[in-house]
Amino acid sequence: MRPHGALPEATAADITPAVLAIGRPHFSQALIATLRRLADVGHCMVFSFTPQGSARCLLDIGNIPVGGYLGVAYSEHFHAADPNRDAILAGEDAVAPIVLPTFAPRMYSDAYRKIFFDDSGIVDKFAAAIWVDRACFYVNFYRTRSQGRFGSGELRCLKQIAPTVSAAVARHFQEDGVSNPDPGDRIEAMIATGEPFAALTGREKQVCRHILSGLSSEAISAELGISLHSTLTYRKRAYEKLGISCQNELFGMMLRLLTATPKLN
Image (cartoon, rainbow, N blue to C red; front, side, top):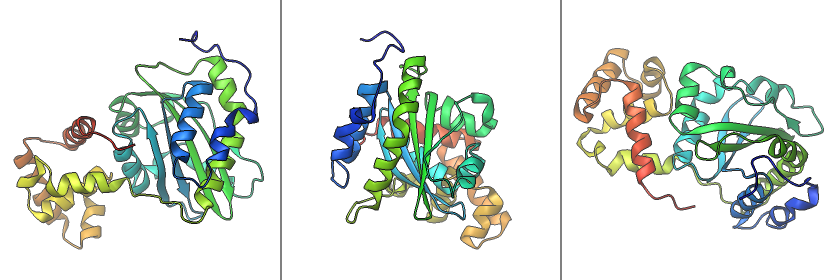
């Protein structure tokens, strides 16, 4: 094992395997293998942003079992609380990729930090973004608790390769025929048929699904076209059947289930 942070100087040529995989089915595997070789990155997630600010998870690969769940929660709600969001949207006219500020836990709200870092075991993050044809590709590199934080050499390497990696990611997802599966499918299926959610009614499952996406009770009511009182009633009944008493316990339950369920990639 290499000493923490001790890495050779990286060049754009070092990401050649990922570049050669653009538009091919094994792109995500080539990308994470390259990132691990160069900077010991544990996990990579890519989101797209529109100029209006909506977000979608395009890629989730690595050593975080609940990455798909985090991608859904971020895309559907928490992207609005990302401290990098303003810098990303403000950079729409930038020609070069944007290397975003160094990670610091204090940048994030308590709720965001608990879900995306504390409960998921993420201890460090490096991010970059690139705008192409009015679409932004937001590339995130993570380290988990078992790995520890990025060392100075790893951060230096990421700063060197991030612009090229971002451009490769953008090009890949612009290629015709690239499949971008919805990471919410796994959560949707688990709530629809898996234990312990099988005991819930259809409406109770819908409410839980939206809670896991980060929506407030008011937003859930608007989404489902029901009164706030009805939403609160369905939530109360669902929590009672699941043996929990609050939103944090629902998040914890889903995290445990996702961690215990094998991930395909």
